[in-house]
Image (cartoon, rainbow, N blue to C red):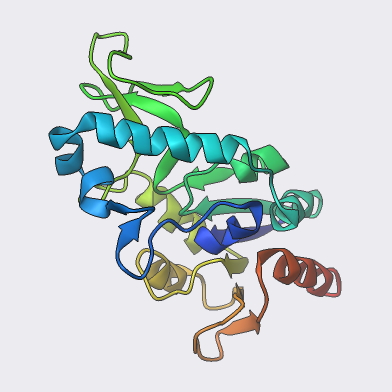
Length: 227
């Protein structure tokens, strides 16, 4: 039986693929207030604005490619039972070949019904517009977990972390939920690694690799091969 390797990835995982972290120090996402494009209230005020914002995010994603870090995680499946929990909404893990990806915050290339959240659809391209309806006749919205909404898959993520034999955190600083508390659920005997170019103080629980996602995961792959 393969060793269970659970990976928690954040925005830094996809930066090398040209996917910006969106949220700047001024609290704006590419010149948009978060309240206007990433909340239910913003959707209620102006669904056109929200749809335009995510259409542009999809166009950028479709022009991007997985980076070496994504490919290393996919390659690790040859030896490990790799379970990826990502805070990212892009599909770069899947495009790199990873077979188990749990998206905490939704998926950019999917839409869901505004009347039935269980009706989720793959989008064939970047556009989702007013008038695009679900099978029940209701407007489709981005399949994104907005601020103020529940995170449907958080309990699944908790169970994955509890089963980790190796836990890897990459592209997220452990300063913001859910990463800040999910990692505390890892078994005491689990080996834990943090990959970050400017790692915070995390105590002696984690082996720290001070590098970006691609370089850090390449170094981790070598370290794991020596274990």
